[in-house]
Length: 335
Image (cartoon, rainbow, N blue to C red):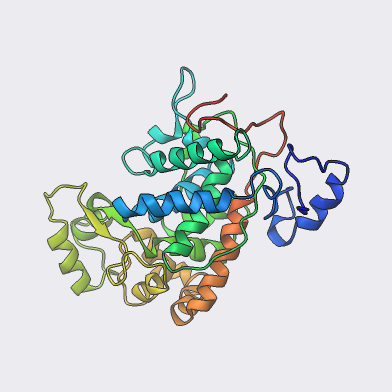
């Protein structure tokens, strides 16, 4: 018997007790637990995993893209699947906001997971939970840690275009980044650990052009950028080149989830300004820089903290009240 039951489970009478049993640590604010679908959709994890494995065969970028979808969803009105909604009259989609438009990707794979789960257990697994499962599976399949994904979210009914404008940005300084995380009750360890998601994946040249050629309006490169790495990036991203050209976030092991993101920061080879801020900002020395150092020296420490921070992030304002959410049949639209 599952320790925490979904609304469709027959085990309802002990709901308050099982919620207490499945909560722990940072998750103690909401009725989420690992075995939420054990009774109603016991193969949910395996089904999701197989769809992702199949998708990766034709798209090696998909794992990094899926974890980013979960991040961008949770940071806007909580982990409610709002990022997945299409625009409707009077409600523009978060997909179309500048931080996501032309950048966020992987939506067809989420739809494929949803279709497979609807075939197996109709109307049971929420789109918000699919994002959480896909993020963990993507990390694990890329060589990173695994963790018990807390489940039981419903899908929200609205998309918040304006809220998505305040997502952490590639040009944010450390003070701004810390403010955005603190507003969500996430701390410096969460900030540094979750930024480690940039240990795999690709990014467009447009997000490094100012660092190469006009940092802070100086018409000069960012002085914190390693000179050899700057020369390499200048070849990849020439001044008047195509800003949409893709580059590895981690040039050492671009498709592997490991600690090399932090070893790159240690030698001033962070691709994004917001990444290098964690190590090189004057404010970082007593806050985030020691955490970068720890993770650069110990992959185990990084993996442990990343797994916990993903749980912390996944617990941001989940919708669990049926009067405020639903299990969408199609992730792109409200039922």
